[in-house]
Image 1 (cartoon, rainbow, N blue to C red):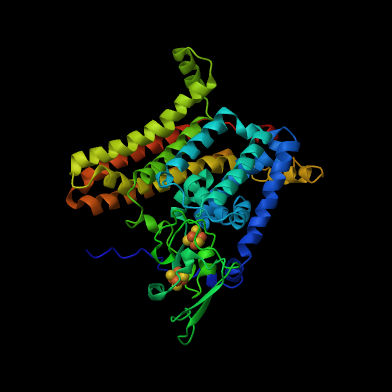
Image 2 (image 1 turned 135 degrees about the vertical axis):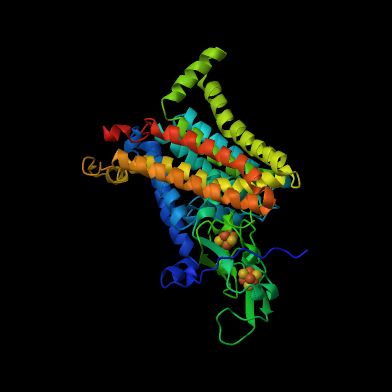
Length: 494
Ligand code: SF4
Ligand code: SF4
């Protein structure tokens, strides 16, 4: 059977060939500079979190993590790509761990999916709500410490970047939603890869004992074909930590945008290309796996549950549940709400819609294939929900970080001066546009998948997914119409 053609970016724009920005990104220490800047920010957040003011809106840890990081990351994903993973400070001690450790084995096979990451997301969102993390600088600082320790430990024990690929909740969020990004790693000339001996983009050019080999294939763009001498040394560049092979990359899933593949390729063949935003969702490139399918749908529902935790009806529901169960344990009550919202509803959506599709349109595809094919169509809608939510928190106090930093540096915070906020009506309009626009994009993708899988019975296949998306969008819309807690910034705005 002929294999499907690879989905590559088709634009001519090679980001790494842009003046200045290209050389900066490709520079051996380019990522390190970015990471070092974010490491300084992370250390400042830790310091302020443990020693600074208790008031969340005056502390760098809480404002940085829960207001600005989340607002900026979602915009970066939309406009550029996975910039946070590119500059992730948690991977700096990880690199140290890699140097110190004797490269261990691979991550246990049973854990090599997205289930751990899903569990991590569930736990993070639950703890955020249960422990009121947004209000506690010290707890926020402990989360940052946990990240550094976990990343260091996993990197020291395992050969690949297990923390990024299988565990990190922040990275997992970025992996999923970088599907809509306008950039992607690919290669300039696939023929060169076909003859490349070392496949350094994935294998790296690190070797404890220096070796040299010669590739009889040209450097891309060179005027004449010439052999390339490739040195593998202890100073060599690592290959892809998440084990992606550049010429076969069709999606941003698992790509941390570290650009190690670019630096490791001796033929200057791997690069970062501009592409049509969300291009990978137009093709059939996402793996048809239960863990991936559940992750995507659960993340969309987590956006709804997360927002639901900040509007008045959640308190009525909590009171009702507490009375019905005769308990005053918030852990139990909130645990039930989160289990329903973040596990049962996504599971019901995924299995229910897939089963209905098979029942109404035909059973020629397995339940897993149907669920795996349609699940990525929830990515735009999920992104729209998170955009509406994180956008709200960011836009009600976009400059709050300035007086916080002023006070952190020992100066006087100009709170009045920087208390500007976007008008609530405008925020509401942005939220509606984000919800409706992303809903329309998801519907359109779902009908494309229906046509690809079911052709003449595509309408029957499409209806269950369209109804599930409509329900998700309407619940989100209802929540965003309600007065939402201005967590971490409320006393600043008073
Ligand atoms: S991207 Fe570079 S290192 Fe990787 S296979 Fe192609 S030519 Fe070889
Ligand atoms: S090395 Fe892997 S994770 Fe890093 S940019 Fe290349 S493909 Fe992405």
